[in-house]
Image (cartoon, rainbow, N blue to C red):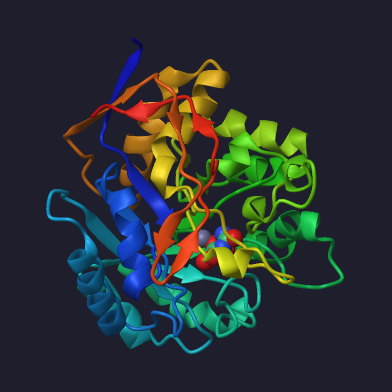
Length: 344
Ligand code: NCD
Ligand code: ZN
């Protein structure tokens, strides 16, 4: 049977929520990843270092003691994030980055940044303190077509930002387009990007295959096939600017299967297996380890993990649902299969 042994990977973009819901999902991640960058878009959001420290403790208490898992924390950038908070975060050891959501761009982003220029003093302080800026790269203008919002963001927001702060380390999160790939490739070494499993496995036809598919709806929304191919090519390129970030984003079945469904795909239960499938289909399995386990840690200035994880090429069946606090969660590939599984 074919096996693949990797340095244990890190997930550089993850939502675990809070409370009982968190308890239902975090061990999927802890069973395969050594560390994860935890997104701060809780209700209310994680805006201070003290919030992040408390949230980290709650995550650690929810992790099964058989796993050695380290949550790496982020703060949620607002128009008012102060320079003293940036210093506190940088001194904390546990906060690694600050997340910039354009206000209204996605789940729980209504208290986020209304105009990035309002945060320029904060960004200056982050650059000096060596904190990373993580970017949800979509404009929120309703006059811009939803499939073009990432590309327009590059021109309107990201390019001026990168020009202004040439030394700030920026991760362009969950990229979905050829224009984002091209932008990252031509930018300086302080610019990198995360890539999700869904954006290399699916295209926008998968939103409508046989009827509306709410469990394939996430933000940024799935794009056309040529964009999927460009993002996949970046993932398997061996370019260290592109690394793994699942953006696994659990929402209850009730919140997804409704007349106004939430954005987010839950992939943590088979995250590394999905990337293995995509890399294998592209004939690039040998590129998976660096993408999943080296480049992200290197960009964040973290030591690489030393222990290993082994995958086996053996089909697994995905459950129809998981429990999710007092509700249920429909996972990616529910009732379907995945070609790989973790070695038991
Ligand atoms: C994320 C969520 O639900 O928190 N949703 C998503 O579709 N990716 C937010 C985000 O990362 O945009
Ligand atoms: Zn996300």
